[in-house]
Amino acid sequence: MSAQEVSWGDDELLDALRLAVRARQAVPADFVSAAKTAFAWHNIDAELAELTYDSARDAEPAQTRAETATIRALTFTSARLSVELEVSGGSVLGQVVPAQAAVVRVRHHDGAESAVVADEIGCFLIDPVPAGAFRLQCRTAEGTEILTGWFRLTDGG
Amino acid sequence: MRDDPSVVALVARVCGSDQEAWHELVERYAPLVWSICARYQLDRGDIDDVGQTVWLLLVENIRNLREPAALPGWLATTTRHECLRTLRAGRRLDLDGLPPEDQLPADPFAVPVEQDVIEAERNAALRAAFAELTDGCHELISMLIRDPPMEYTSISATLGIPVGSIGPTRARCLDKLRRSPHLAPVLGLNDDIASKGAGR
Image: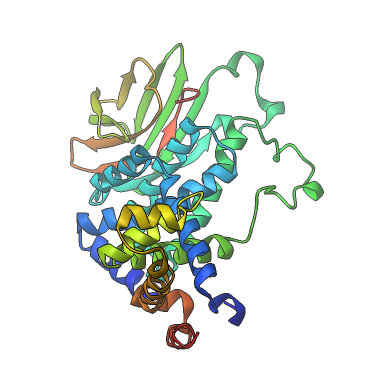
């Protein structure tokens, strides 16, 4: 910071304080309280599975055939487990790889969650497509647990 | 400024699962996240999404921050990144469609991250210092920073003090504010300023 900036006289100090207070007042209370609820996620020790493929992002337009264009496909990958998703017809068809039974939880920002079961070949169905942003927490019968990053499959909030 | 001990302490407490510290951290930096979102002209729903994403990323990654003092910079950068991602996803900003040579500058709303961070830290320090003023000073200064500021005659009537004593009280209160330890990390030369203020 330059020397000029720190030589606040009374008026400058008052102006600076006015801006500081106004910046805080501009923030809606529910924006702040929603941010505070994020603390609920502070101690999740599941392995994070990263989005490694998203057809909406990665597919080359030239390679996208008309009949497959409406299917969104995503892959989340961690060292021990991957989850592949296909979205079509208003639901999400999922596959745990390597194939095995698992419990898949759909978790939303606000703590709301629901669970579906992946069968012994790792297939599961989430119906309908969850609204808004969510992530999947997947726990296999053997106890391996992974958590995908946040993503959304619907438009808007 | 990068060594603001209060940021480092706050991060350490959050890493130790202190929920109160998380709330303090949010109170302190929510205006930074909000103001960046507002600059990108996102609507309220998108701002809420960006906010959630940013805070969740922070709560999950706070233990991995290499330099806790760099937290505000991390927040500013992550917020911008999420704002841009939101704009692109909504195809309101088709930067990816541009030829590579046209992609710089990629961010039409960009101001240096450092500028956002300095402003946020200064504002947070000023609010913290302000909050610790004595009731009398806090009340008077609150009236003076209203928009528009209250007239001395109304202040006199409200606080029951003579108009003539408002000026000296204002100077005394601002001097206390200036000397607050909260302002030391953002000003760096706090002692110098305090003595300058006192000598006026």
